Length: 121
Length: 107
Image (cartoon, each protein chain N blue to C red):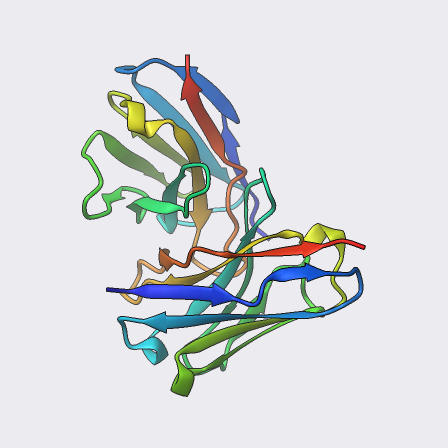
């Protein structure tokens, strides 16, 4: 069974940093591109960042580019999101999601349960 | 960047109604579109991918159509468990933008 489990969320002050983690199991982690998606409470879904299986390609939403860094460690089946210079607008549930590996259907087929990041003074 | 819009933003419907939700892309994305259903407190669930392919296990009352810039999600006969928010998303290339969502609630 595919599972994605996020951790690392919590309360942070504006301007500070947090690092999120996501551990995958039940599939061959290094075969898949992985993504982060966030959802502010009561709001819609926002794609944040994605990373290819080999870390060669990293993409970011304009709203986080230059502040957030995505990375992965395939030996640990883990995906990370380093979030710096946090603002109140970064308050959201953060989900990690797996990109389906079957060409050309590259939608996000499995999602974790999410971890809540609250940015507040 | 390609923008995704949805209409309506919300709708009220009754059990048994036929419901149609539209998603538009500001530029063509061929059929690289997925529809998700999300219930409060839950993770998004894939309904349709490739604009029209039903995800395994999803009831056949859900269907999708369209290509290029205009797409529709149709629920042929709304059931009580279908009251939720529906999102479209493009997945051909970054940024993998979501539509703003359509909330379907009980009339």
